[in-house]
Amino acid sequence: MEFNAAQTEMEHLLRVSWIVLIPAGVLLSMVLYKLAMLLHGLVEFLTLARYELAPALKDVRLTAEHVEALSARTLNGVKSVENSVAATGPALRTVGREIRYSAQSLWRGVVKSFSRKR
Image (tube, rainbow, N blue to C red; front, side):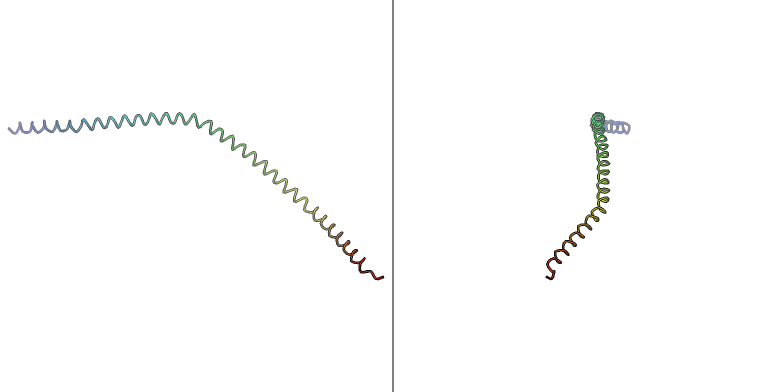
């Protein structure tokens, strides 16, 4: 009788195990299927991104080169203007002195012409 009870309990345990294992197996297979689909989508995305981003990166690189060349030309232009301003500084000072002396002479002449005693 003990043998029959143990056998019955084993059969009952086996049935309960199948009841638990079948849904667990189905859920596991669904998870694996979803994972496979996710990986497939990721591979397609990476392939598409590689072919779409390569020309865009080339354009960005080309734009950066053009900006670099433009900034170099602008820097040269700014240096040229700076040198020109520095070169005109002494000339402006000389012209300024001449204008000041001329104005002073003119003013002295005007003052002397009105202050002459007759």
